[in-house]
Amino acid sequence: MLPDNIDYFKSKPVNIPKITILLDNGYHPEKLEEELKKFYPQIMTKIRFKLSPKPSKTQKEKEGRTGFVPVKARWVIERTNSWMERCKSLMNADVVNVPGKLPFLESICWQTANVYEFTLEEMLSRYERGWKYRNLFNNLADDELELI
Image (cartoon, rainbow, N blue to C red; front, top):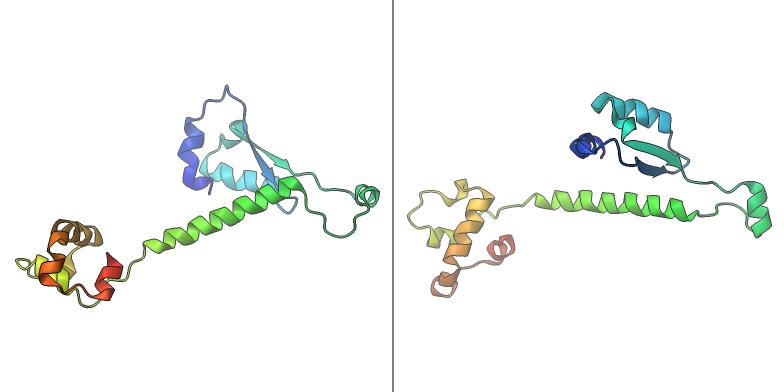
């Protein structure tokens, strides 16, 4: 994710505090630094990594807990990761299946030889302009309506 947004970090002034990226103890900051420096060698002048605190066995015993104890900072990291995964799946929603038959589009674009050569943006533009004729032609199929 950071390499995709490297321009933001390049434009960030050095004279303001570094951005702290809180990491779970499962991450290895030195390996992350090494990989990020391949994209932007001065990256560590703009960001820093901090490992989230991990409760020791004695701390857990004092609190009367055993096994896995969630840490508030860890929850933030895990939530952020899940939100990012969700956004990634939403990005895949851009893949649109155009139905094999588009009778309404063919009707409103009767002067066009092949409406199936339109890009999705061109199709949607034609639908928008011709929407007022939907009752006149009365041939808007369910598949086509779902596309719109």
